[in-house]
Length: 124
Image (cartoon, rainbow, N blue to C red; front, side, top):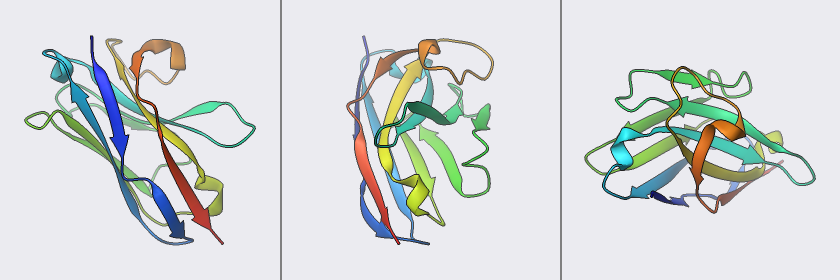
C-alpha cells in the first residue's frame, strides 16, 4: 500500500513557474515508478510525465517536453514536477500516481495508486 500526497499547486501568471511535489509513504514507495497526470475542467485525465524507480527512465507527453521536468528523491520518498513557461492551457488538477509497470507507461490503468491532486491555475 502506498499513500500519495501532492502539494505545490496554486495560481500563477502565464510564463510563470511552479514546482509540484508528491510525497509517498509506505515501506516500498521507492520501488514504484511514478507519474504525473492532469485533468482540465470538463476533460479526461491525461498523462504528463513519468519516472522510473531509480530516475534512470524519464518520459514526457508532448505537451510537457521542453517545459516540464520530473525528478525524484528516493531518500525523501518524493517526486517533483518542475513546470516552467506555464500557459493557460496547463490549468488543471495535477495528480501523481505509482506504477509497477515496466517500460514507459502512459495510461491511467497502468498506475495502481493515486493522490488526491493539486490545483494549478494559470492566468492570462
